[in-house]
Amino acid sequence: MTFVSYAQNFEDVMLWRALSTVKDGFYIDVGASEPIADSVTAAFYERGWSGINIEPMAGAYARLAAARSRDINLQLALEEKSGVASYFSVGEGNGISTGVPALGNKYKNENWEVERVPVTIGTLRDVCEKHAQGRAIHFLKVDVEGKERAVLLGGDFARFRPWIILVEATLPNSQTPTHQEWEDLLLSQRYTFVYFDGLNRFYVANEKLDELEAYFHSPPNWFDHFMRASEATALQKSVELDSGKVLLERKLSEVTSELEKTASELNEMDAGWRLEKTAREQLEQRLKDAQTEISALVKSASDRADSCSRLAQNSMQAQEQLAVAKSELDLLRQMQDTLTSQIEAYYQEAFESSRHIAWLSHERVQLSHRLSQSENAQQALAGAHQALVGSHQALVESQQQREELLRSLESELLSQREQHASRLDEVFRTLSWRITRPLRAIRRMLPR
Figure 1: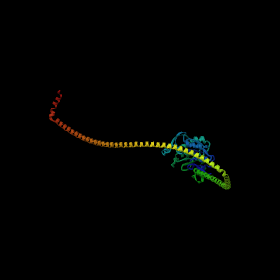
Figure 2: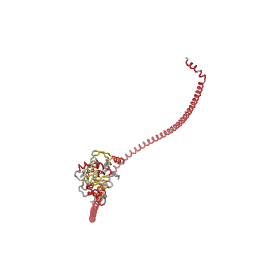
Figure 3: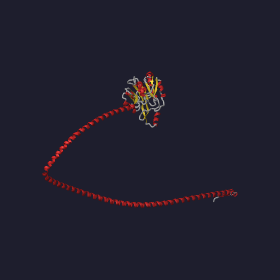
Figure 4: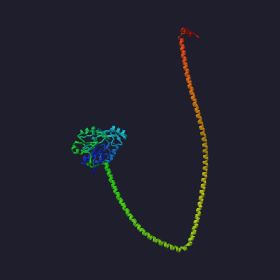
């Protein structure tokens, strides 16, 4: 049976190569996401395996719960300690949703739809104690978008030892390695690195190394006898189309046979119909001959009755035609009255229309007169405006002349003041002024 791979990087092919002899195996999928698309465990579930699916995003968890009835489906995230944390739901909770703020903000800057949602946090140790106690864990897959170390720190690999552990080992959507951040935790717990597929690193428990290591010496290849899920779907559709084609061809053959049978029956019926037609024509001819003879025998006797009947019939037809003519005459009179009323109404409408046209013509003359007056007034206003502009210009020039005269007078006054001050200064400096100064003081003191 050809193995159908659902995983995005053939991880399930590598795991099936190593574990195909295990019956009713058990897995733990941390960051399971979808039940089919890019799922590492879907092919194993189809072959009777079961396990634990860990998925914190509500939409993906609901689809897992609906599709994986044999599995244990848990809506939570795994870290070092239990509690509640805020995670980033990306694109309605798709496979790149993360609990790392830097990645959440990066996706938001890249125009992804990002929403912060509260998430229940558990530990790998608690999940194993509750749901895997006493069971062999054949493989553990960890794909948690940057929280790999936290998941591994929360495990107890001394008590619960998956045979194979595969962990996403690059930054999301890149080839930048990240295994140096957490690989020491596995190596210290007696796990050995055996394979890197460009995205995930595979580790085998030391106690299973001799048994399983050889399966990881080469990548997926022709000898693994596998096909992608998309190829399997296309092949299934092709088979269905081929089956439909066979059914259609069979149905077409049946319809063709029915048509041939129907055509044969029609031919037989046509031949019988020709025979019947000949016999019927002969009988009809004999009947016509007999009717001709009978007609000839009764013709003389029935001529008079026919004449009377025709006269009565013609009289009845004449009366009916007279009644119809009378009815048509009445109808024509009614139509004439109606047409007369309509003509009078049309004349009245024409008269009203002519009056309205005359009023419109009068209004147009009035509007033309007003428009002429408006144009004259506009021209007068333009002349007045021009006159005002000229007056304003004259006033401006007069104002400028006055300002120049004022500046001249101010300059002359300043000059006179300076001359007067100079003369007073000369008077104050004379000997006679200084000698008579006491007399002037006494004079000011005397009463007037």
